[in-house]
Length: 460
Figure 1 (cartoon, rainbow, N blue to C red):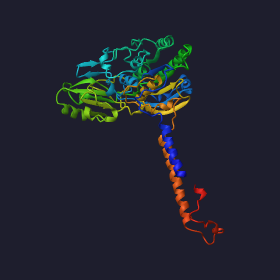
Figure 2 (cartoon, rainbow, N blue to C red):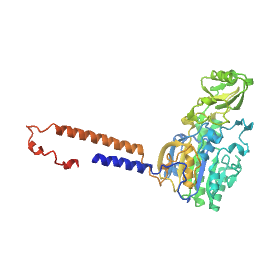
Figure 3 (cartoon, rainbow, N blue to C red):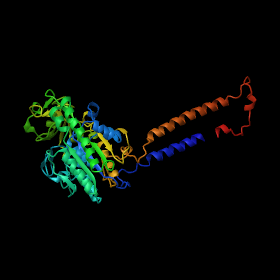
Figure 4 (cartoon, rainbow, N blue to C red):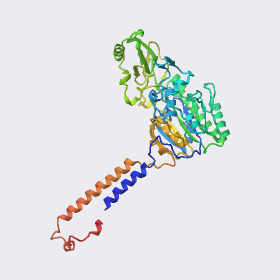
């Protein structure tokens, strides 16, 4: 009977731990009560938090949530990852594949600064969904927010300009949030520490310490501005990044001119992931590149590993080159930058950070890691809007929330099964010992000689 009770307990635990797990794309029932602010510090590598001092950041997470690192999307570039954050899609699904792209259907080339919204139309960013739900949005320099995607920009936005200070950006956002109660989602982008990481390399601890001190001061300014606007504690804030950074070197150059003629191919995008369009014999170009350098992987489009989620889009070129960490692909010439990103998203140096604070989040809670695409269903849940089909999972992030129960079903079932095994073993041993019968030399053995039909109350 005890075993039956434990089995019933396992079933109950299963229901208790899975009650919030439904279909990630279903509309969440959470009422819209608190606005949400998403902030990205470009190029903020997760392990910077272990190397440098961040007093304002520590204050932010002291009564909030800190995540060890995020696994971002490939390629680990700025535009692909910022669009993944607000759509929950891999790059192959939302179509913003890199900083430079070529579309074989339109024969157009995309570069940073391109204002044609058609490049972004393969997905719907969260600010458009917010507006379609009857609310308003605001954005300060977030990639794509000033373009008419699905015929709509963010309700309030700042056209991109690196000259606009962080203080001006957060100042505008807090004003929009304070003055217009219909603004439910806001997004803020800041160029550091990416800019310094490229210029000096992440191994330059002197310069990176300066850049990261500025970032931490901006986190302090963010909290101060929200407090002054009477929003702190009434707004959910997510701090994150798009990618990390790794050190490059003149000694780690891969020169394509040493391997094939420029008349054989055209470069759509270069380092550290190069998009190659062969101009004649595709097999010949592939074979020459495949023998080019041991620190460079060469893929035909159809053979790109599934784990990268980077093959099912027309804008992906026939041949993709991926440099190993710290190596730089050039046609011929010198090192373009001391620090770079874009490499395989499994590398720790490419992983960004995440922290969250607000009425919806747990206090002083730590989570090891999850995928950056999981942020989208989390934000939809917080805003109470319908999440569009996406590659993320609310299940993986729900433990950040105060309102969610987070017992691990697998662990619970494992414990119950372990207890069952122990109890079954003990029961078998007990019955085996009992079946041996009474020992003549054992005192009071006659007391155990009972009728077979008698119930044993100890086993009831």
